Image 1: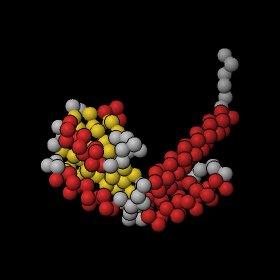
Image 2: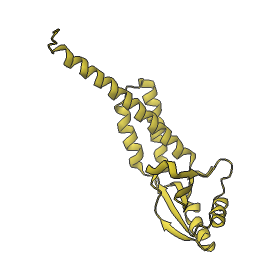
Image 3: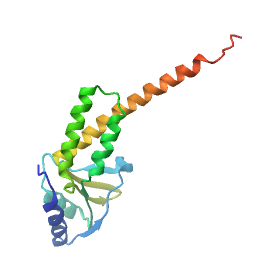
Length: 169
């Protein structure tokens, strides 16, 4: 997998136009997940095959989106990492890896193509390996923070119950 998708970012729109497709710069709303079908990037990574499928299915418009990696993503993850109850060794390892990922600042980290047929969106979602790693780290951090929040909420409930008077009537 490429570490930077900048070449594809410029190549893909040209290819789409050469196929007579309109290109809409946007993104597919993932709130409607039940209406999304994802292309199997692992077995067929070539975007041209996805585009051929779109043309054969009768699509005339392709939604095109590319995501540029921003330092803020790492900074937010580092800030959230501080709020977790992860063991210090795990926090340090995650912090070290997150800081290493800063070197990809301004690289294109993801490209998305999509077309709609009969109310269902077909999506080609290509991401770099390092961006996938960042998303995995962010998910681990969010999960650890959520568990910590739940534990804190339980403690608050216990503290509040100590000062209460309960009637046995």
